[in-house]
Amino acid sequence: MIIRTFSTMLFMIAASDIFIYFTHIQKVASPVLKVLWFMPSLLLIAGLIIIMYGGRQTFMIDKAHIGSFYFMFCLALTVPKLVFAVLYATKFIFQQFTHTNLSQLFTIIALIGGWLTFFIISYGTFYGWKRSVVNKVEISYKNLPPSFDGFKIVHISDLHASTWSSSHRALRNIVNKINDLEPDVIMFTGDLVTHRAKEMKGLTEIISGMEAKYGVYSVLGNHDYSPYYPWKNIMDKKKNFEELLQLQKDMGWKLLNNEHCYIKRGNDSIAIIGVENWGEPPFSKYGNLPKALESVDQSNFTILLSHNPSHWRAEVLDNDIDLTLSGHTHAMQMKIAGFSISKMKYNEWSGLYREKNNYLYVNEGLGCTLIPFRFGAWPEITLITLKRK
Image (tube, rainbow, N blue to C red; front, side):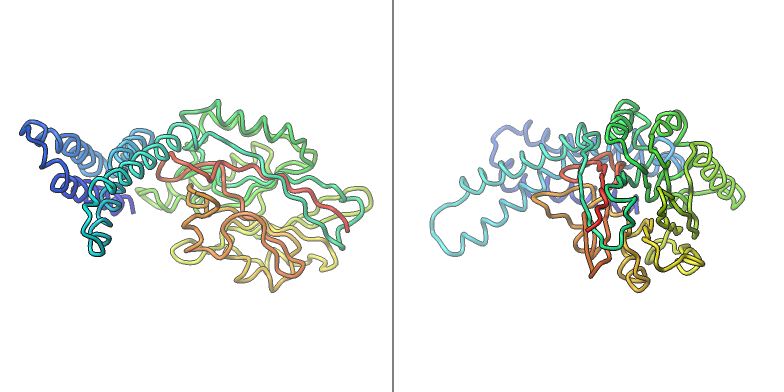
């Protein structure tokens, strides 16, 4: 995937530069400026090639902070030019309907689009992925036990520990925001790491500072199985997975792998069910909901933690689970005016959904994958308050 992305990047650089050269730069009289136009792109292409093919296979993972920020630097210089080229190219369509020269008008439009794109990429890279927000949701149920009226759940997901290796301060800010909400319970819906358990080095103490009356419950996401790292052998991969499980145990988290438990409050209790990652190809499918539901009294109020929201419509609704919590989508780490391209892939990709009396909440996640960037889809902390009708 990384190689395919970088190959696309190279094409974007070349195509936009050539197009703008023939529509605008070529008109500049100075031969020096004509040559200099291509120099930044040539340097970017050289850097991309060195990163992709000049180092070890694991370079983009082990040195992700270098590769990722260089990639964003490339995006900031390339995508605005691509947007400029696309917007200006529409001139040739409109030109068919008028004899007026539209070059100046479309140059202005293209410049505005290019600079706006540059702002979005720059803001999302330097600040957006650290700008955590708290979203508050209240859900009412007739079958909620009386003792749980007003029960506060903080739902978080997709921490991706590698995101925070260069910004402990931002992670501490997230933990402080969670604790300030004084939750009864914290529920984490997978992807604690991006590739390896060692990403947690230096972060465990910060993350374990999250506090809730009934503790932290968690499940595994597709990244937690470390399928995207080029392991030398299966034993190293297995050892890494066992280390990740132990890390959660050491932090005091209750990891639910296709199992359930109960939270008791007063004379009442609710069932907390957790499944391993349940995904559609190419994502792993280890989740076993029937196993997790074994011996659960159907009269109990039930909350399910399942990383991938696709699980809800595929299987969960048939089992009449009161509330399902998921993550995984990140809203593609970009949302403008409420729209994200996640809509093209997932039926449920962000926020609260309802089918009859069954609810699903999809958290947009805290961390990042592949690129250190978020815009609109800010790192999310969700406070869900359960109310009895």
